[in-house]
Amino acid sequence: MTIVVAVGVVLCALWIMGSRMGLAEGLDFGAGAYYYADIPGFEKIIRDDAYRTTVPLWAHILLFLGWGWLMWRLWVWIDSR
Image (cartoon, rainbow, N blue to C red):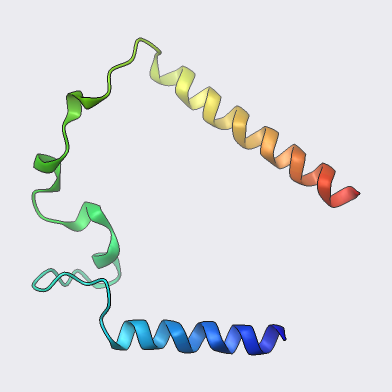
């Protein structure tokens, strides 16, 4: 079953690439063409002042790392059961 699913995924990926699905015409940046950051002038579309916080950046980073550690510990606990 794993081989059937793997072959199906590869065939779907090849079909999607062959059909050029998801590409914006005139914006061929290779593998990065699917990322919004490759759109010329994208920084003008978003607003930098849309999100303001009084929490410092280091606190956001610590929260992010803490959440990752907690999820890792949860996964280890689930895997050990």
